[in-house]
Length: 204
Image 1 (spheres, helix red, strand yellow):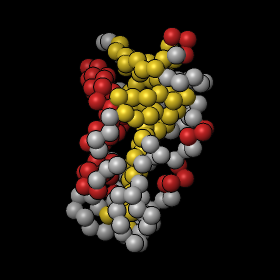
Image 2 (cartoon, helix red, strand yellow):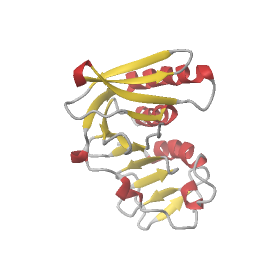
Image 3 (cartoon, helix red, strand yellow):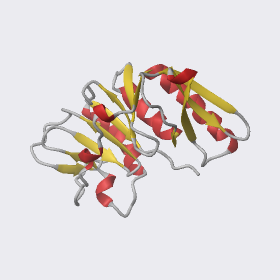
Image 4 (spheres, one colour):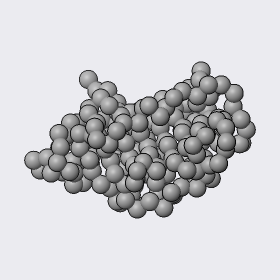
């Protein structure tokens, strides 16, 4: 689904924003089952069957060196698809262009407000990703499967980065799964062969 080199290239963006107080998060966790995980405590990337290391290790994506320390059990953070409140399908290239435009709309008023809110529209048949600030309002609409749609606010930059990962992996369509306003949501493909999990932003 994704090459080792491609995953590690995108993992480097995540490790750069990982807290210095947790050195293990500056690396990519290699599980013995071939899984790769990387997180900065706000987002998580996971990929199946990417490596053949026989033992667990944490590898610096920048230089390939091994990092000492215990990596958290992030696999338990990945929610079950059956628990999703609603699901949307995305064309990866189209969505990347749309969220890049929304990010630019966010940045009209300066850094620090790079957020998008998911809202139900058209009686719940669609969701709109809305970037709204004192200068403008921009939105991107997609069809959604039936379900209980709850507003979710998240960092637009994280979505753009995740879509770039999927695009570089050669994925053309992906699935967004939402689990509630305050729970992380996922962008995934197939049987979670490649997955990005993004934590929501709390709003007043």
